[in-house]
Amino acid sequence: MPRGVLDTVVAAETPEGVLLELRPAGLGARFYAFAMDWVIRLAIIYAVGVATSVMGGIGLAFWLILLFALEWFYPVAFELSPSGSTPGKKTFGLKVVMDSGLPVTPAASVTRNLLRVADFLPFAYGFAIVSMLVRPDCKRLGDIAAATMVVHVPRAVPRIALDEVASVVPARLLAPEDQAAVIALAARAPRLTGERLDELAALAAEVSGDAGRSGPAVTRRVLGVAQWFLGRR
Amino acid sequence: MTPLSFEQMYEDEWTELETALDRVLGRKGGKAAARSPVSGARIAALYRRACEHLALARARAYPAYMVDRLERITADAHQLIYQRREFGLARVKQLIAVDFPSAVRTHAPYVAVAAATLLLPTVIIAVLVYKRPELILSVVSSETATSFEHMYSPTADSIGRTRTATTDWMMFGFYIRNNVGVAFQCFAGGLFAGLGTLFFLAYNGAFSGALAGYLTARGLSTTFYSFIATHSAFELTAIVLSGAAGLRIGHALMAPGRQTRVQALVQATRDSAVLLYGVTAMLFVAAAIEAFWSSANWIPPAVKYSVAGVCWTAVFGYFTVQGRRAG
Image: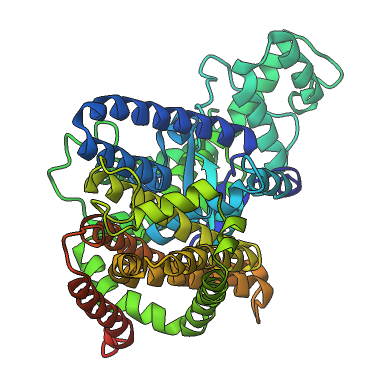
């Protein structure tokens, strides 16, 4: 599929021989997630700092240990939870997985987060940014070493809403990929403006025997063909 | 077969698998019914069926929503079935009793190089500064040098700190943050062909060497050495071990052998992760000793030296003997 060339989808093969598609998250999404986690951590540090300042030495010790724990183990703790993502990542629909698509292992999570030290150099996550921009799978150094990936959690694709369209017998037989293209057009129909839908349907008008014509009526017939291919006859 | 008749035919199996997955993973409304057990064998069987259906749906170019649904079911089930459980007390016990010490032994050459990189600069700089104490000024400012003297003077309330009002607990927190930071830097530096690791080891070695040489020349050796003797058994070893983990990574990058560089790197980090677990634990122990035991001025140096001897023997014994039988 030419999609493999254009898209950044990474395929992970399961032992059953099925390819799972993983969609690596790019610099933008990961930056927002990181910024949000950073703000959350700052807020915790500040709140606990105020609360413990009245307790003297022990309070300060607790605060320093918390600082240490948040610095190194905040991401680890959340990545090993069932959701596999920190609050920031969760908000932006991201998740950390192994290259195989499996949940991240404790060893991998610890290494990918300790290696932030290397990713941070020379300043402000410089190496991490370069690495993410250069690689199609958007990994930073820690991800490469730990064999992990930050992926978009797939969103559910809505069902095709074609109930009110009457089924139309296609004017000629189509190969499965062409049938899929017509069905995909029907799936996108609710998200397109009427004019754009008519334009696109005019390109496929041949399938309903309306080659060369366009307009809402032709569009309905093309969608009717999609209905027929789907199986409502 | 049309897409809709395909969906109709297998709808029941997919819904059953989806419900089972929701219950096991504790998602949306799945919790209410979580009481009754879910059959693992049934999930596995349904998962294999769903894989088959996904392959068919893709090959026949079925509509996106259907392929997508099958992809999500199979991905969830795949995660559930093949996940690795590495948690729990049994795993911790295994780590302490066998995995950590035997990982140290398998990395022995790296440990040796890391130890040499840390200790050679320490000794050389210590001797240099001992012979010519004014050299300390090329490492730190004169105020810092004076404050070091105050910290380790025998008349101080507690050793190793400037502010007497601070408590042991505060220093405990400070030592953890500081030392673990140094150790993790030594590890992460390995990604730069091991040069970062070598630099951090040598730098920290040289700095402590300068301090030791200066304080010895100033005649404060008893307070200083009785202060560091005990916790250094854990702290120095931990930093050497994290350096060893970093060197392992650097070596894998430079000489990947019959693997690609990335494969070698992944293998190296996987192996050395065990070292990092151990390093973190050791640094907690070291910070506790440093804050509560080493700094106590009322304990006579002779007692401190004997305890230090016991600790060093225990650490070395642990790494050389522990877990050999199981390995």
